[in-house]
Length: 540
Image 1 (cartoon, rainbow, N blue to C red):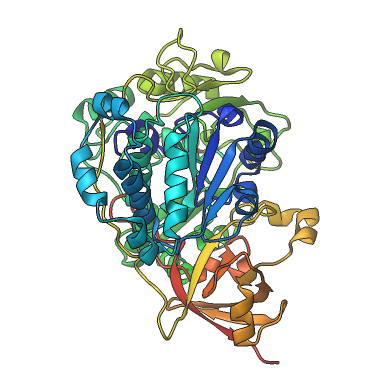
Image 2 (tube, helix red, strand yellow):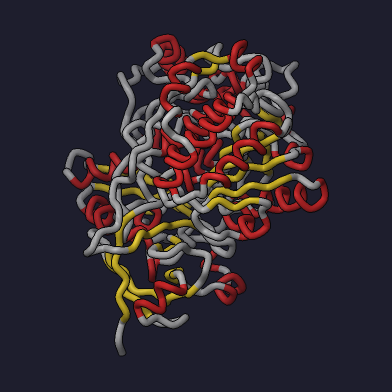
């Protein structure tokens, strides 16, 4: 996307975590970093406190980092394209963009200029609520700082305009030349452990390993020869599309590994109906999750500490882990289970060890080409690492983009799929908290963590609480067009007026009962971050 395909197609950081301390400015968009990514959040706080880096946070909610920031912009939810276009409008009109970088390394500037021309700070203020002068100040700071890093998370991706938002961020970074250098770049922070490695290894419906497209005949032929199989034509379905197909009876069987879609997918009631509609459901996991409870067969898997393997983190670093203890009972490493099933289904799949699997990965995956278990000992290696002499890549796009010239994409603002109305007057925003991880399958089994934060809440602005007659701790019924739940109200200034915030960690107050499965048309990511709800007191 926008010339940064190698990193954005994978969702990986263009730069490294260690570069944060050398940055002069951190622009953090739609990321509650200290709660969702506390180690990186700590590095950001250190950069500000110890190295006097400037910090700009763009987020509708008053997160911890927003409270520490030099500037906090609080836009209306779902207006990311508008205010990013506004930043570029200022940078272009005030002649602050990096002309040398743009002329030598990009294309499409004129089309971008024509599009962002109407996104004046005053026009953007009407759409986003960001004061025009604040927008100008941020644009000038970002454009004129030499080492400026952008960070974002699902606050801008989990929208029906998620692809547009990411491409807009790429436009902004290229326009200012903040790409291909140390302590710059565009740095998405991944949502779960090894989600980066899963994407790298082809757990996406349109890629083989290392982002080799399934529509590329040479890549397809390479894998067919290596595996001695005929591979299907074209891309498969994404997770939400799979659930829709199961609901419609088009998919009859499903094999789910280490995932709990009953709580993590949007519109949970529909997800449960889809899973119950299957002829056969297999779940491979370490605990009997809400999803596993619906399965016909549950396969017990080993945890990370009970097996050897590798993990790829958000900065593209591939690291080894070593087995510390034996898996209990019948639990086994995932790769052994998969091999056994494959062999019993008639396809011979025999590996002696994870190291042998990594050897095959390196042979078939150019960005992992120089990686082996021997070389990964210690601190690991960052891809791309194309050969055994290569030391890995701390930051991407140093001399050129993967497509050659970086391409600007002219993008217009589009509103979210579902907005509040008279029947459902509140906007629901969902996210994470520091104490719990994802659907709570692991963290809610910890007595200490549960004592600190035992239940889900509905965050509500004090002015809305007064209007509806809520006090802190009162019970509320929250309803969308898809479901309803009951949870305690937490009155806080963190949430803007006429919005509520919930996490998806708690099955007793599962936010995804309410969320909508509307998809980004390109990336097919659901719009977790915005839907319309009503909030009603529960009278005793």
